[in-house]
Image (spheres, rainbow over the protein chains, first blue to last red):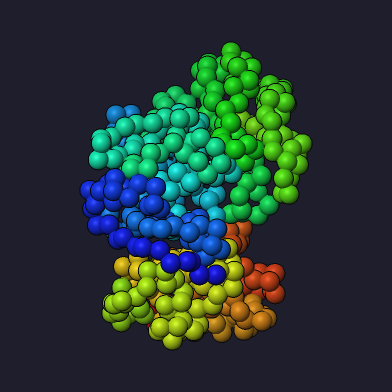
Length: 286
Length: 155
């Protein structure tokens, strides 16, 4: 259970990382928190040729609100996302979702940039990013670009980063007037969820003006449940409507079958989570 | 890095050396255990800058902070270890060093008042023998006794 040999480069500046990436491209595997990568290396499922360590690179760790967006540096740890007062104050759903990742030891190392780039279909944060219609900032020697979540997260363990690019931050638009929440069902707390839902609603005069629902753990990437949102528009979120929305969600989503849960069970969980989350959001608004 | 308070600059260490192997094989600190070897069980828990992390999925070369192992918290964990024995919080004992190191970090910040929150806080340390009730009650008893001892000293 030890990793195979690799070349290790301990970068100490952003420029150094970008130069390494530009020069070595595909040969480079980036080491952020290492909570998925090192287990894969221990099991020899990953055999990187060159490991560029981002842990000593300054400038990748801030959390701030800029231009109506919460900007979180790629190397911010999940434990800090879960507890930082800026995050808990402006995007509590993101803080709550981060607290579902693994267990405390894992959260102390896992980074938001690494987690989202890893694009694990069962992972919480890509779903939250999708619900907020957030983006990532990619940097290379060629320049900088912003990529929306939909373009960045391609499928299981696959993102659209070019070989010479680095994710430097993750951005969540703050949506005034909206309430967001995240919840999931997992065999045990800290396990990958069988299904998770991030939901956002905008309600005025008791009527739904906007809704965004994203499911994780059911497909190869986060799934936006547009049918549920459409159904909810213009309605009052009373008990009967919420129940109906759960049913719409259960029918809309197509879920994977695997050793952990059947497709039918996952669909049922999606419906139950929609009921639970929307019920709580309505209670909070009262 | 610092290991249990002593400066240590691992010169010439291989990049593929895990912190766990560095501690056990090169420092002779064998209290830190390897069980799953892939970050799932918590037997290899050590503290880096006071935060519990898993040494089996941490490369030694990347560690800059203060590392504390079970050997480094011997005095601090005395009451907790006593309570582990008192409450039957271990059987085979293989997970115990990780449990104690995790417990020390929790006691430093104060245990969560709610038992479910406390169980979530120790969810990264798997024990296949006890069923955790003993571990939870040992942590509670240790916190109470440490607080009593502190107030005794202050009065």
